[in-house]
Length: 105
Figure 1 (cartoon, rainbow, N blue to C red):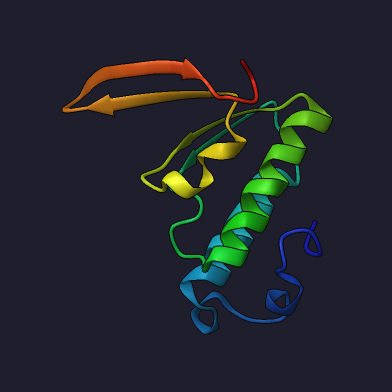
Figure 2 (figure 1 turned 45 degrees about the vertical axis):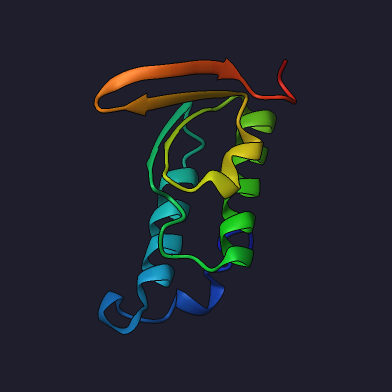
């Protein structure tokens, strides 16, 4: 798992010595290592640069496909919506749209 989430360099450091993005990578690795059936991800890519963001969402998509895991992701980042099977938009606390993604349709 560390290799997949690019946290290998974080393994020998205390949390106080890690950046926000490194801490987020470690948290994601901890959540995924037990092969859960459901992952609730609230802004999982907020602290990442564009390359790391893409790596994380690709890993989450791979987990969903290979292990039959469902991922419920909440994000404001429209750049990562391409991995979704379904996209639900909320506005002012109300459901404004619920559509399958282009690939899932």
